[in-house]
Amino acid sequence: MEEIVSMADSTTTVDDIEGELFKIERIREVLVRRESELRYMMDDIQLCKEISRLKKELQKLIALPEKEKSNEEKQREEELVQQIHKLVETRDFLVDDVEFERLREREEDKEMAEFLQTKLSKSCLQKA
Image 1 (tube, rainbow, N blue to C red):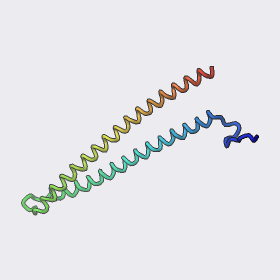
Image 2: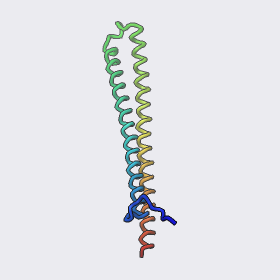
Image 3: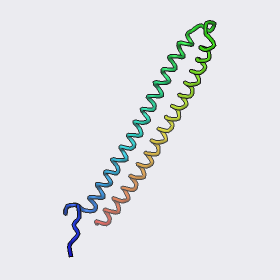
C-alpha cells in the first residue's frame, strides 16, 4: 500500500499552515479596508471639485448687478444653489458612511483581538 504524500514539506505543520493562512486573511482584510478608504477619498475629491466648480460659476453670477441679470441667469443661479446643496448633502452622507465604517472596523478589530487572546490562552494551557 502506497503512502499518501502531502504537498507540504516535512517540516511544515498544520499549525504553520493555519498561521500563514490567518496572516494572509488579515492582509487581505487590511487591503480591502484600504481599497474602501481610497474609494471614499476619490469620491470625496470628486465631490469637492464639483462643488468648487459650481461655486465659482455661482460667484460670477452673483457678482452681476441684479438689474442686469437675464431670467436665464437668475434661473441658473437658483439651479447652482440647488446643485451645490445636493452635493454638500451627498458629501455629508459620504462622511457619515466613512465614520460608520471606521467604527465597524474598530469593533471587528476588538472582536478579533479578543478571539486571538482566547485562542492564545487555550493554546498555552494545552502546551503546559
